[in-house]
Length: 101
Image 1 (cartoon, rainbow, N blue to C red):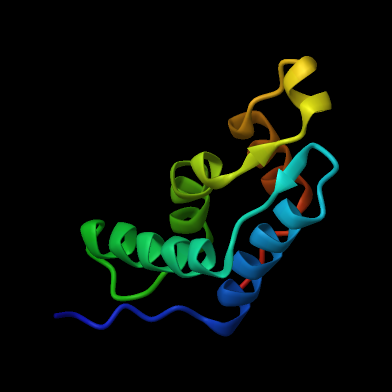
Image 2 (cartoon, helix red, strand yellow):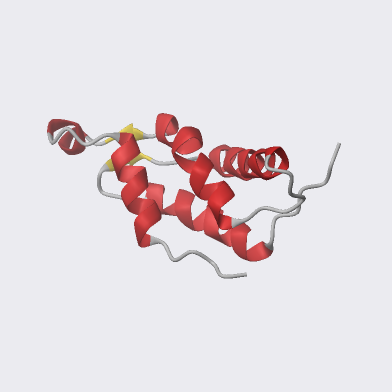
């Protein structure tokens, strides 16, 4: 099996994303540590499929909604306002600074 490298800054980026789900008023239950690991592995798989042996920020951004959104429990207020987990995760991604390697 190929080794797909993930730079420390990108690991921090993944942690920031999952941490932001735990501190968002629209989310009652945010992403777990297992979700953090799953996002890392999904980004590695995405890089591998694209023929790279390293992860770039776009690999993470491409996978984050698919990996994280279904794991979240939205707050009652968010559900009343018809906010979806996808839209909340997308807004989180837009607010977090992308690391420059």
